[in-house]
Image (cartoon, rainbow, N blue to C red; front, side):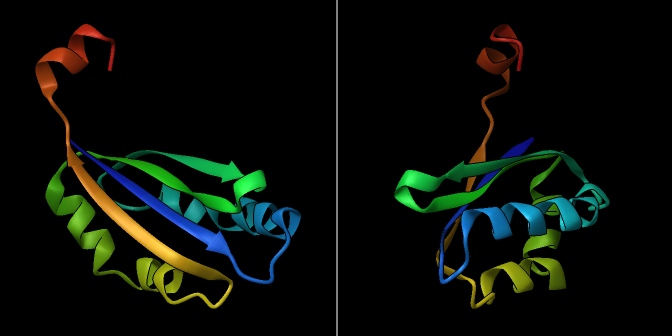
Length: 99
């Protein structure tokens, strides 16, 4: 299992317009092979947005990173300072804490 955290700042886009767009494209993310869940993040006060992705494997996450969908996020002019970080999940303690 892998966790991916993607963050960015909005660039000349309102928080409400961004949220409306998220509602429109959520199904494209739901259809990604190997994606167990995605949590959509918004910190309007600090202009920080993004998502926490729970992947079934590193390979599934890597396929997303190489996809047109991720490229659209990474190169979207409405987003600046896009970052993506990958974390391996420690299975033992995660199970103990109901992960």
